[in-house]
Image 1 (tube, rainbow, N blue to C red):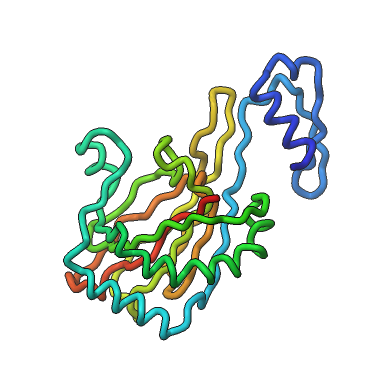
Image 2 (tube, rainbow, N blue to C red):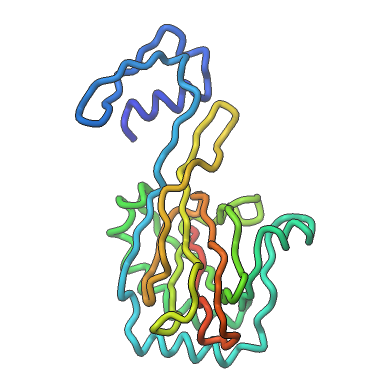
Length: 243
């Protein structure tokens, strides 16, 4: 971590230590800006993320689709870790297939992720770890579905999640609009960490794999889909990696 970044975070956490201190920061075009340590109110950091295109073979995508179609009766309305149903309805609407039956999908994607991650750690700004736990679920977003801004490792029940992944396997050509993955900057303030401004707006790419730290604030924008057919909706194999 660059020394200047460490200093800014420290002064945000302990403002009194910034008194009388000056940071020399490099602005665009190489210009140096002098900032008083006790004038730092916040720091906004871009969300690290990687998009890997053509992640699966066509045969593997067919396998994922066949599994999804075979388990269509097992899908349930999605929820959140918020305590009240009213909050859940306001924050998320989709259907998910979760539970032990997804072990087949976890077994399919885990070796590919293990082979991929060594070259992604630097791009994600994370220290390399050997992950031993992988969660996998199938998510379906149809007309009007969405997921409001959230992180994947809050609250405490899911704090073990370190890396999030999303594999898109909808049909080609795409039969829906919307459903973008929006990633937000992380805002460091004296009172804690918060969601910052919009940083990336990513249209779902078929057979694209999105990978990002689970602490990053993100959302799925509302979907418009005239068809009610499962194959026409926004389909993902998504989940989380943990140590």
